[in-house]
Length: 169
Image (spheres, rainbow, N blue to C red):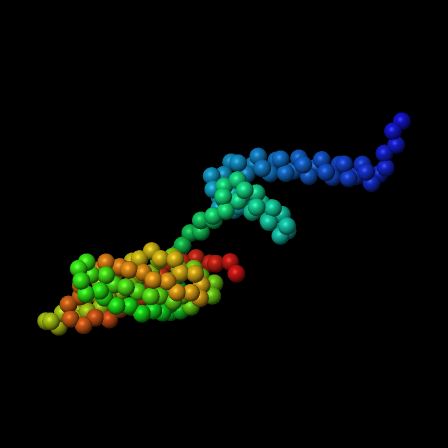
């Protein structure tokens, strides 16, 4: 009769359970269509950072490493942390050139709303609102160019809103 030590038997059973678990996990991950969907759908009963890390890595291995994070309109507090400089190009097509700074330390900007306020020669005030997709990482600068109708007379501009998403630190 073959003598099996208790420790070896326990190790063999543990190893078998781990292999079965990994096989089942990979099979269930294949039902998703993107790494984001895979990660979100697989985190249901996860109770440890180690398990979450395994799921994340498995999803990245299957679908690629890019996570698509939905952007949303940012609160005025977050928008107020955006700053920048801009100037209007003087030849057609008129381009509004913006250098924007994202002062948020945990938000990536994915788009900005720009208001150009101007008063024409008759004294009529007008506001033109533009949207530009742009990626500005936290605490960094990016440039954007917007084709605009040339404002008549003097103008001012402002970043009136923004879209963005929470960035992992």
